[in-house]
Length: 89
Image (cartoon, rainbow, N blue to C red; front, side, top):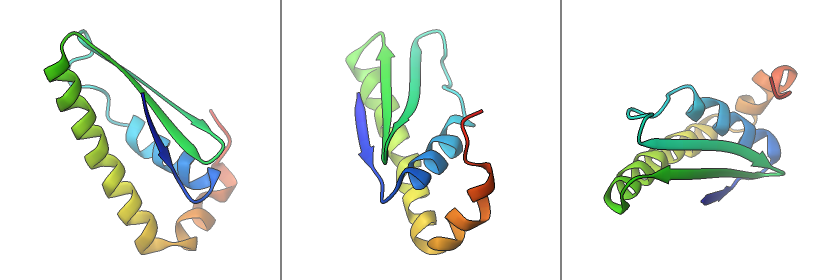
């Protein structure tokens, strides 16, 4: 389980939505669940091997890095543009 804190719950939810669009490449051997707890994005992984876990978590963290840099670049605009659609589906 990986816990990524964000500035606010809205940013954590935006990150979850951006990341969950892309499913795992090997869904038969990798299971990933994402959820938001307050301002924290929680990712839980289940894999068959430690090596695969390392690869999957590294790829996930690269996606998180991209989301964080995007949020930094757009700041309040990122939250304001989607504030009407932040409820969980």
